Amino acid sequence: MQGPVKLYYNPQSRAAIVRWMLEEVGAEYTIMPIDFEAGDNRTPEFLAINPLGKIPALVLADGTVITEAPAIIAWLADAFPDAGLAPAKGSGEAGAYYRWLFFGGSCFEPALTEEMMRKGQPSLPKASIGWGAWSDVVALLERAVAPGPYLLGERFSAADVYIGAQLSWAGMFKAPGITDSEAIQNDVARVTDRDAYRRAMQG
Image 1 (spheres, helix red, strand yellow):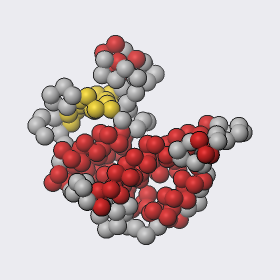
Image 2: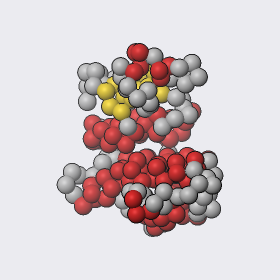
Image 3: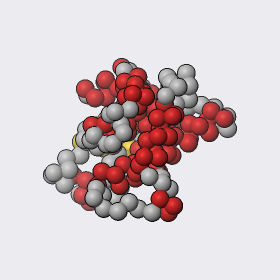
């Protein structure tokens, strides 16, 4: 990849996951701060980058815009192969890797949203939603991380950045089954005990 990238960023957002990934791969990047209270994400300039008014948004040196945290993470893993955060394409290991990248956005996050924001309301029909139920999602992740040290076994990958950050975030919000799961808390401790993570959080 040629040239620095721009990350539209607020530390209290999913953009923090992307900043961690940028540090993991050693990318040259510029932070473009987004102040939600000031409405920075609703300006015409930002809406031209992401019409949904959401971050993260990554703008490449050639002007290409990438949104959606797992898409950005996957792109960075491919763009910086020397970091070793993506398995060989077409391998069985890559299949597991993509599974977890897609699981984070398509199952974990909507299940967490339902669990935390629909309290006291009837659950959505389990047979009609892709994640089934929050308890199913937590149980699956517990089984996935319990063997350790990482989702792909001995290999730390971009999937650990994404899922690890989500689990850490869910724990901060006291999501049921997260803070009281020894397997999940051990995983969070392992994946966040990295220099790249510390640089991203302190930057």
